[in-house]
Length: 362
Image 1: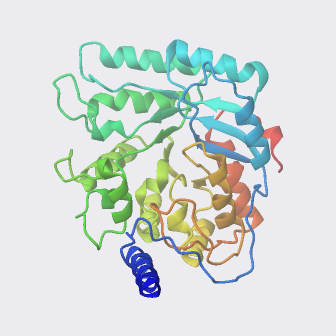
Image 2 (image 1 turned 135 degrees about the horizontal axis):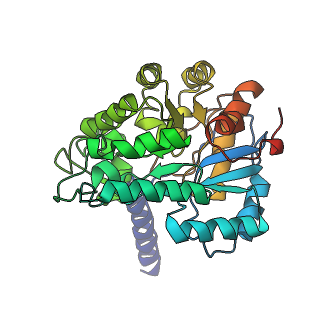
């Protein structure tokens, strides 16, 4: 009898284990590849580089030593802190950064677009922009709230190409500072949420990212507004964050670069797109090598090696650092030294003022 009970319990346990395995959700399913291929993690960039898409939100008061330590490990020579804020906050951030680590950070200022169109708003905003640049800001960062959330003085959605904002973009051109702008989000955030959506896992785990054509408008409209603004202000240099969300359609991105010679692109948060089309992406980088800048976006030092490995190596089939962004493997582009230097620092030195060129090789 005891033997029967033991056998029954063992069978029940085995069934339970098998059942649990069969009931595994897609979010939990994350198999380790058995493929054995040459290659190794690239922990340090081959050349000193400039991160044109950095964020240090508390720079006015934070201890920057841990940041500098991580930067040195990565070979990150200069971080462009896009979250410089404005006014007194900007002044304090610059003072804190330059007190102990002169030359390691440059700051972009920011504008609060809420209430645009009110009496005296544009005059005050342009004056503050001038003051921020005089204080040491070397560019303007525009957050995605413009086009998605910002309202004008009448409570209506503020379009990116609203003519009332023209003096801002014109002033940036006059001052010789670039505008780094993030507009919208990946197009599939607006698409139907089903099994055909490549961003299904991201939307499942981050449901607030899902949008519709009425939240607030179609993706295509926001992107068109951005391009309209670029085309209207030809004397102003723009850096389109996240490759303008066209890293998954490099032919179209190439057409846009040809149409808008004042538009450049940063590679922040889209390395997973480049790493799954290594031959096509490499050809694109070679053709547009003067228009692409290195940028990471979120400050997570442990994620930089994925960028280095995609850009520098010829490795095959290695993992990305975020499953919900990309559950496909990465491949290296094996860029030449000449192209790497332009992406890592030469293009930024040309476009972003105020960076000490002596810190970089010829």
